[in-house]
Image 1: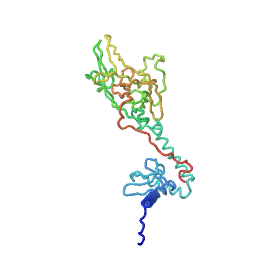
Image 2: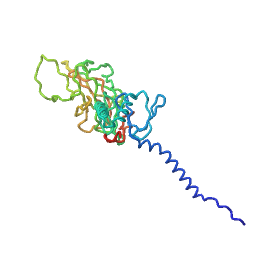
Image 3: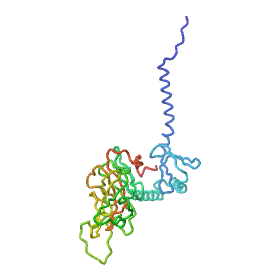
Amino acid sequence: MSPQPQTPSRSVFSLLALVAVTLLVALMALPRFSFAQEPSRRLILKDGSYQLVTHYEVKSDRVRYFSAEREEWEELPASLVDWPATDKYEKDRAAAGASAPEAVQFDKDLDHERELEEAAQPQVAPGLRLPEDSGVFLLDTFQNEPQLVEVQQTSGDVNRSTKGNILYGAINPIAGLKQAIELEGAHAKVQSHVDVPSLYINVEPIPGQPDQANPSGPSPGAAQPQQPQQPEQPLVPFDRFRIIRAEVKGNKRILGDVKRAVTGKITQQEHFVPTTITGITGGWLKLTPTSSLAPGEYALVEMVGKEGMNLDVWDFGVNPKAPANANPWKPEVKNPPAPADKRDN
């Protein structure tokens, strides 16, 4: 009886399959590896910034490039690329090398432009910059991640009967009666998950008020020489913005009361929170409570000299258990750039 031919065992098939898969993965990784090893080049954009790339190709109205920093393929509109500047940089670099005076000066100019952009949008946490050049933003931490949340203005009202921008000019309460300054709704849309949130402020001053870029000035309690013939001096920036604790009553938040005495004098009562304020780059102010805020509702208000308070406020709450805020800005995680003397080699 002739011997039967032996069939390969299952283990041999498994080994061959493993080798095939390994080779396939290696082949798929070759283009990525080769592009990652190529010298970096620059795609210079029309806004003065640039992308470090190792390879790029134009397809229709798009540019597809391999990022040297992130080591992955990305795309952008071809119309955003400054092609003459990109070509000139490549030619200068090829002709004289990256150490040529023109290339060195070009790098300095780009770095200077980037510094100006960063100054207008200060970094408030690692990888997190203020996203706009104006507005009010709250620095929060949610699930151990720093986040910036924009706080929109909300119009306050006085017992829903009279509205106006400036408190004292908007109402005329009856002598001896109080009127409440109210916000609709029991809770603000923006909720801080930390009890010492910082607010970053850069808004246009009300006419007659000073620029907020320099918050230096006399202390609120300092004695001032009396000069009746001079117009009233506007508030210095550290008096201009304050935080008020709101009292929730039903579906409303009460920011304070306004009362008119029989003598005609109008006074307002609010629960101000002690804060510190500092000026940072780009004309921004940083306002921070001096102690932890209890869970509840608050508002950033703008004071307007003896006229009182602007009724358009920036409301927020403090609630560690609140859900995530909508559309926050999160840190950008990027690979560290290559040293300056090796970036373009």
